[in-house]
Every structure is written in structure tokens, then in C-alpha cells.
Length: 160
Image 1 (cartoon, rainbow, N blue to C red):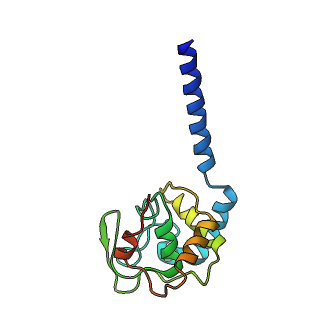
Image 2: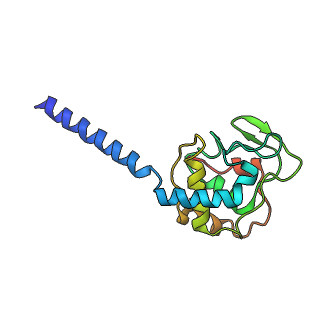
Image 3: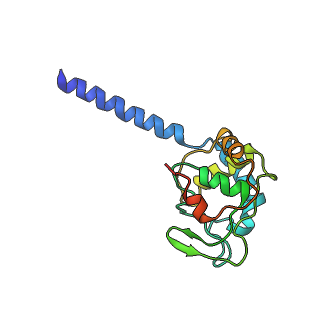
């Protein structure tokens, strides 16, 4: 009897884990919309492959920034832009120009959530979906901000 209970408990756990994993996969329509936004706004710098351009634009492929558990830093980067040196996967990336211009006025919450979901689940990245509500919350929390973000400022924002 104990053996059967253990078996059913393990089966239920594994089924719940599989279900949770399946639910975390981005919906295809979100990935399609995200790819469309990426190809309109992001690809010129980060390239269609997400590899960026050496000494000019940092990679998004297999990026520690894109794969962080919480997308709050990425949302801020898209909304307000990023300037100054930044480390990607522990390697310093410097460029004389600002790394990324702000897109907060050009893109709405749905577009930002879709493109970030696409980036976080493409180019070797595997992370959660970004929702329009998450983008809206960060946009509201940072509505007074006018400056681009620096790496030092972004690092103060929790990723877990």
C-alpha cells in the first residue's frame, strides 16, 4: 500500500512538473509577434541570429541578461535604453556610443512583452514569458525616468 501511494505521488509530481513546463512554453502567436517586432526594431544591431556585432552591439544569444529568471532588467533596458560598458556572460562589452536607444515610446506594452518573450526563448535562451502586465508595471514604476540605464543601476534590480 505504501509502495502504491509512493508510486501515485511520484506520478502526480511528474505529471504536474510536465504540465508546468508545458504551460511555461511561450504561445506560438506571441513568438510570431515577438519575431516580427524583433525584425523591425532589433535585428539591425543584434542581427537576425542574435549574435550582435563585435565591438558594436552585444549579443542576445545565450545571454545571461536574456535568461535571467525575472525580466525586469530587460524591460527597463527596452523602455529607457542602456548606455556605457556592460558585461554579457561575464565578458566586458564596450562601445563608444550608447548601447541601446530607448524604445518605450515607439513600442507598446504588448509589443515589448512579445519581443522580450521571443528573445528570452530564442538564440539559445530559455526563460519565461514576459506579460504585458509586467511591462506595464515597470513602465508605471519608472515613469519619471528620462535617462538611459547603466549596468551598475540595472544590477541593483533583482533577477530572482
